[in-house]
Image 1: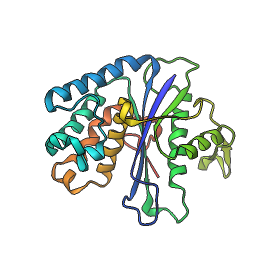
Image 2: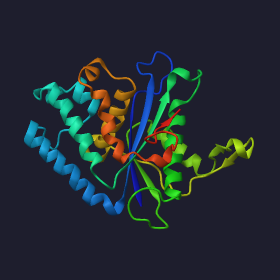
Image 3: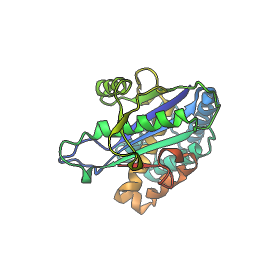
Image 4: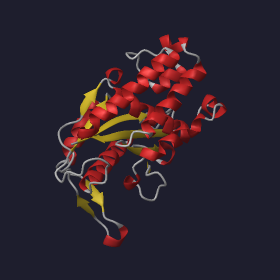
Length: 255
């Protein structure tokens, strides 16, 4: 079984939205590699406790860590940014992780475009396709399936979308195959999404950081530009899944 932990950055609104981009990232690992990977994440957290006084029970919520740290304001801002950089380096060094990313540029979308539906449908399809071709790292069991673990979003809408994709999932034909579509229903993604509170999930906090760093690469804040933080997502390139968008250098699906 492959597990995909998903979080988002930006919002899905088109009118008067504060963000141009909506981003979904999914961290994928095989269940048989879960123990080694969580041990690596916990070792990182213990190192952050030793270096900066960041307690293990304190959540790394990336946007809040930088812009609205609350009690974590006791850690200097440049140190909080350093935590994110070190976090990215740790993930990049974990051999059994793969990162799937979807970016929607809302500036070129017509009114009424369902950003949420488009982003999640694309991410789930890429998860399904990569599972079906057994292209994720880890054990190559012929009957492996996948399960979604998500930070809370529009939970009901996402659950309904996954259920619909099991019976109706139209995918346009490739240009060489003519017009029309194929109904490629889900066969490898099983069950409804499992929703997790990010404050108690090291994996959701990790993928939150991935989505945040990708957003800062797409449209960096003035602070990130001053500190060259817009380049931090590049540190995650070793774990980016190239199979999800072969024409993109690091496999990011751009819509």
